[in-house]
Image (cartoon, rainbow, N blue to C red; front, side, top):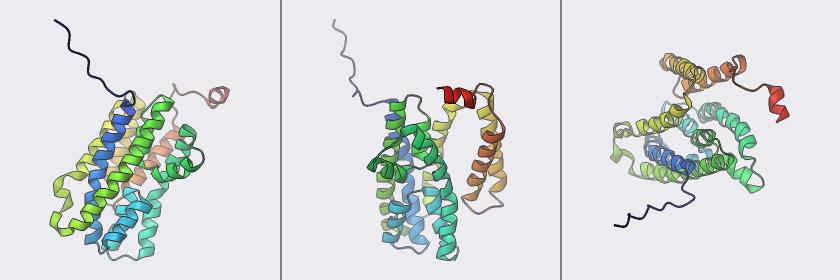
Length: 240
């Protein structure tokens, strides 16, 4: 009896690509919520699409339409969006050293630098997997986010309350899937708990979007003042 032939898988179907596609699907679906909420806030379909194509960072986009829906001025909406977008600049500094893009790829990489692409790349150890993870997640989210933004904006009120579909939960679940494998030592666990507590305490006090930014500041402060005993010193890094 001959054994059944093994299932063949393309050589390019790596863990980083699978992870990037998974988080792209979960995050892209959440674009339906943004499109519907943007139209409900008074934006046209094309204005909603412009935000997804050009701004392309979910936190900033939701902050923008949140201010507009509350009756705020356009300048205030842009200010809130820019404040939340600062984190992407921090990601960019890390990813520039990690991926070292050149030429036109640097401009494209800058546009695709978001939470999902940065987390997928950082979740890999091999340099080639970091490249695959970043580009798969970045391009995947960009395409799907814009497609589902258009769908949500066109359907508008026909969707009802977008949150009842649980799409926000899908995005959170995707981030937890990225975070969980990294919580293997006490320090990352302690930092995750601390940032979670800070976020939970800040939610009733701060406008939407700012609690997570506050947690990012706490994480940055932790990294500045607390150093893991296993982490190499600056001198060791330079020697490499």
